[in-house]
Image 1 (tube, rainbow, N blue to C red):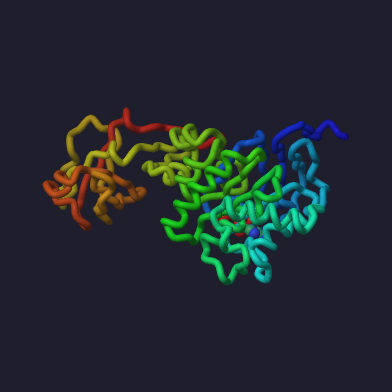
Image 2 (image 1 turned 90 degrees about the vertical axis):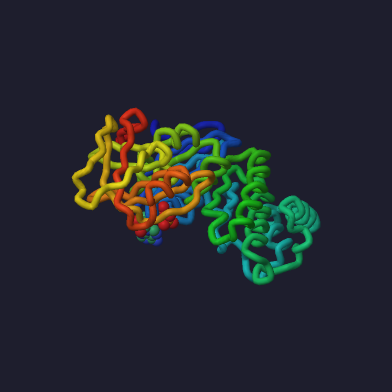
Length: 337
Ligand SMILES: Nc1ncnc2c1ncn2[C@@H]1O[C@H](COP(=O)(O)OP(=O)(O)OP(=O)(O)O)[C@@H](O)[C@H]1O
């Protein structure tokens, strides 16, 4: 035992480094669902691999009081659900779910009974004799979730479990998963690209960027005060980066006015932030009309206007506009953790 050992009785305590790709410290209590978000290449899958033991990492991983750092993968109480590569191609669903239980010494008959129970709970009991090639994407993910939960893991890793599914199928599965996660006593880490997943399924959010943890907090905290452009965009805020500072504001806070082609008609308002731009796209958004505006030398911004003003101001693709937002509607955050 060295002074650096973490050694806690419960929960997940990890401090892992994957050379050149990731350095992350995280803690989570039993029963918590942690959404892991961040841009492409941020290190989300690498983090899951380091915890699962499939990516070589240095550091410490402790789960439920056990040191996983040197524990063989098969001895970790771990459940994994990955996007479309979770099931063994030659196994029937019931055998796949029972596989992990059998490996842990549960007798065949009991393992089969439990496997069927889990498949039924996930709504795919009638597909128990099918192999992966005979299952739709959504059905296969239900089987994969049943298999992961059947082992009663201390740590459940879900890497984009809804990716590639139709919206309706994903929505049904999200609701189902939320129900099972609420009853699950271990820790779940969910990698997602979807703000909805992060905001609805998670108790905590961990934001990765360039292999580092840049923010942690409850979904509400992270959504309200994003510390990275990725998160701001994910939760539907406009974001303008100035040096180390992020200025974010809601699409509904943006005022839009037409711009004469000379470009010298900047509106006389007290709004502090103003951009000249051109409407790139127009689409209905709830009761509003959402405009995507490409600004000159700046970011793309989103503005929500009423249908009446969209018509009145001629806000069609190609229209030249001024965008402005009151200083009081802009939130400024430092990107430094
Ligand atoms: N097998 C590998 N060997 C070396 N580098 C890798 C390997 N896999 C990923 N990387 C690199 O490690 C970094 C993190 O990748 P990772 O796949 O973990 O990111 P991610 O956040 O999961 O991205 P995405 O959202 O695109 O899946 C990237 O720079 C990536 O190019």
